[in-house]
Length: 72
Image (cartoon, rainbow, N blue to C red; front, side, top):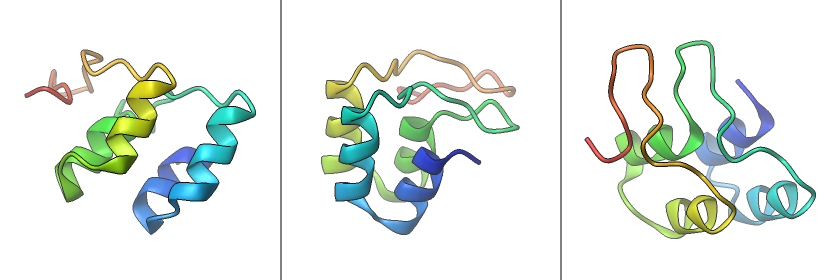
């Protein structure tokens, strides 16, 4: 898991914002191919986290290893 994934899992919005401002890749994937935005949606639904990730370029159409996307 990336630092961004940990921020999402732990509900650390401000830390997520700082990492994204410093250039962290919003489309980074974990070992299952899951992006942060997909991870957050599956556990929490659309929120400030998803909006922030989208603002910094998260791609909601990236598929995980099961072929699922954030939009599915």
